[in-house]
Amino acid sequence: MLNTFTYFRYGILIVNFIKQLHDIYLSLGSNLGNKFEQLQTAVTAIFEELGDIDKISPVYQTPAMGFEGDYFLNCVIHVKSTLTPNKTLRTILSIEKKMGRKRLKTKSYTSRSIDIDILFFNTICKKTNKLTIPHPEIQNRKFVLQPLADVNSELVHPELKKNIISLLAETKDKSTIIRESKWLRNPKNDYDISKYRYIAIEGNIGAGKTSLATKIATDFNAKLILERFKENPFLPKFYENPSRFAFPLEMSFLADRYQQHLEDITQHDLFKDYVVTDYDAYKSIIFAKITLQEEEFALYKKLFHLMHKELPKPDMYIYLYQSTDRLLENIKKRGRKFEQEIEPSYLKKINKGYLEFINTQPNDNIKIIDISDRDFIKSRKDYLSILREIIK
Image (cartoon, rainbow, N blue to C red; front, side):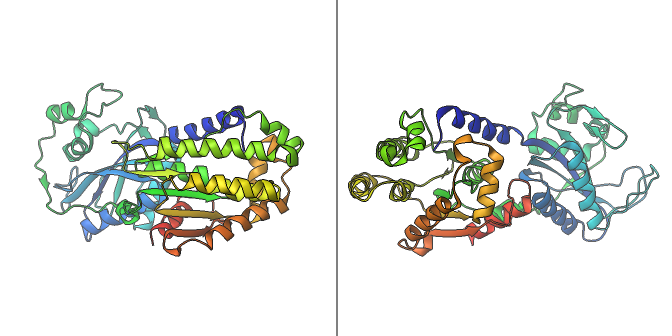
């Protein structure tokens, strides 16, 4: 339960998280071994280690440039990632090394199993000993410009101030490139959540439900609905005297959650494919059972069930389980003053309430995911492991 200021501050953190997603354009090439398979392996590794792949160009067969060697297969991909330019470079070099690439200190070109270059990183212009952004040879390489135009022809070069389609028309590189009929597969398709039109992500206080809902909505073009909080005159009074002010507090939250479900979840968004929320309406009854006296809860439950009949039910209900110790760590880290006195026993009661509710529901649309040893914000590997549990 948050007051308006705290929610506003937390909302800014979520907005900042979304803003940290960077637009990165990468060029991939291979002229050794099974070239197409090498490209596919690199694309998969980039998805797993760097970020979500928004678009993949067709694959082009191109001649070796600057040395004698077998033809290349090249492509360009658009990636959305939270990594910085330097971390992106380190990740790319690590992927190349794992795939057998040996970068020589000499500046001469050689054949390679995989070559991954950063073309653009947002609109950043940067030059260091290790990294130059934008890549200095973009305008001189048809095998880069053509697939880049396929991905985003209107993308503007931040230094040359021209879009890619113009640079392609003006390039002095007249080499012949041949478009392959076979397409690379986007690994994102392996994490398809399209069968779930409405996903509710639940969890205890500090479990990370809002963060996960935000990540999924961002990656899968979903309508994100976060539990909203407004200035509630009963909230400070409740923390001072829970037994006296629990009922009016829970009633006010019940009314607001009911209104949000009717207004936000039932309204169709033409530009979004799914709905992801960071709470389910049944949250009201779980918390009320803990905070209210027996007579109050009996009345509250009647009102809740009358209202609950009209509300949409999630196609997938996800409960994020974290150990009590981990929850307390998370609560301490996010620094909300009114949460710092929360007792472990209270968190255990909430967890018990959720599990009792879950045990009454059909198993085919509920997933309990233990994230006690996972950090899906810092580790993309952990994030993808959670997605796999959702869709399996």
